[in-house]
Length: 484
Image 1 (cartoon, one colour):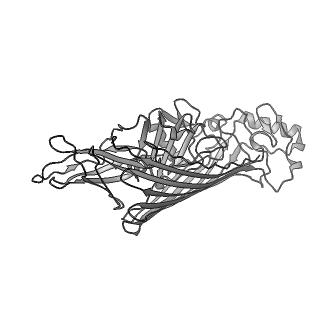
Image 2 (cartoon, helix red, strand yellow):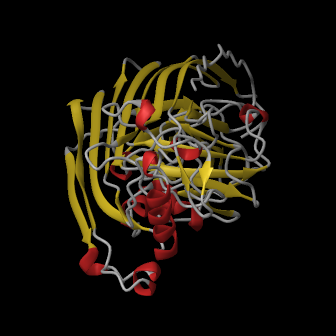
């Protein structure tokens, strides 16, 4: 079976709160000691990581706004003739949120500087959406058994992990369930572009934890810009380079020396199942040109070998079936080796063209292969499938995915921002039976006896799905003069 999906052309022109979904906003009001608004004060926001500076002035209501800011940590400064400079340092901005930073200026004879800890809890007062965020420090430092960012979903209210929706995504970590949903109607976006599996639902591809800056889940009450989701929205922002070179390296390993004997092994008086997992990779990022051009990349590889053990009763049924019908070419096995290989890579570059224009491009890919003697559908209602293939042949369960996202942000004026984004993505997943054995030599189809199935039907059917997507988005944000 094959499926082709061409993402439609989407132009979204809006005002108010609709803007580049993965960006954020810092806004506030400036007053003097008497409570009167300060007009034409100069407001400056400096990204502490990249050194990129944005400048604006307060309007007739004393309001300032910095829209479409890259998530990160900022120092915000207010300057006005006759008043002391006022600064708030370490303002943490997460994606798709608005941080309110108000200022009260003192006279020039006074020196005032307000320090705001980067760990301070920011209360969102400009949007009604119910959401939760997992930021960089949590993504990097919280323990995750298999290092998938989906494992962090349990830390967000109303969310829990959902069952694996596609057996070709064994290392993805499953889906997201919000409010008791099944996980198929979740829309995920990475850097403001869709990462949706239009074949079975849920997320399309995985991303290395080393390359993720933050993860945010919009549980409900989000705006119409997320109209393609009927349940919840997951927002992921990938890391960007900064003015300092930074790199990481990691290696994790587990084997059967650290696992207990499984239930069916104990009942059948069988030895412990073989298990080995090696996961390693790293990241590096820094400036190509300080304060202007940055790059970041991450890569991760996983090798896993494990053995599925079937109950002795099922194995005995397979032996009886083989003896009764030798023409089936059935080869019963109680131990099914199932090695798995997975590779993740992300490269991102950000370039500040001038004070009004910036450009960003991100490439990500995932290659995953599982070689085994048969397939078992996870959480399936079908009975177990013992090995039916000759020992010299292997089935191929694989996925190849990539996503290319480019965006250009234009600061038109103090109150207007325009972002144009384009994504091209490709997703190919397939399950195939061995090619070195003629189909005429495979077991009969649709044969059940009584706890097992043999043949090429059910989970063992040859299948391939692929999805091609082009996505174009143009988002314009015009801020009114009467709102912060």
